[in-house]
Amino acid sequence: MSALPEPAAMEAMRFRAVLGHFPTSVVAITTTTPDRCPHGLIVGTFMSVSLEPPLVSFLVNRSSSTLSKIQQAGTFCANALAGNQEPVSRRLASRGPDRFDGLSWAPSPLGNPVLDGIVAWVDCRLTQVVEIGDHYLVVGQVSELSIESVRTPLLFFRGGYGDYLASATLLMDRLVGWW
Image 1 (cartoon, helix red, strand yellow):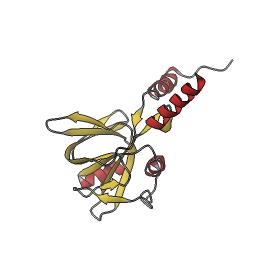
Image 2 (cartoon, helix red, strand yellow):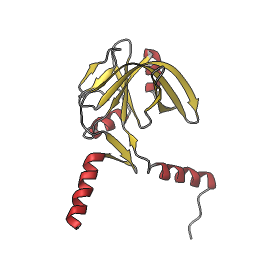
Image 3 (cartoon, one colour):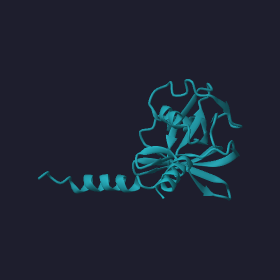
Image 4 (cartoon, one colour):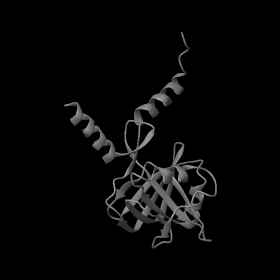
């Protein structure tokens, strides 16, 4: 018989397993440094906070090297990745200075990268960073925003990426074939 995990470890594993059943959006948060060098990270926690004033937020791990770049710039852009942009997500989620090599983008009104092929973007001025547990809650006031395409979004669910429309279509095809 194997030993049971420590209660704290078991709870952390259970927490992660259960929360993995909640689908999340895949959003690239981008910024540029004063020398116009692009920086970015991937989050699954982008959300609307307020209509008046228009505020949005995301969570970022305390170990993020990109958060300091966002704080230095004072601005960021949230890019909602499309269902076919898993490679973009993986690239921006990696470590290293070459994350933007080969990625096509244009500057937002505030100068932040707006990635090609995305669903929508929201350009923001940084208003607040609050430490919460092992993350920071980053809040921004919306300066400009736009819908770029009618593509379906990239989602993260049960530890993997997916395009919800493509997955639903495949499931429906299987069900119809089963009947």
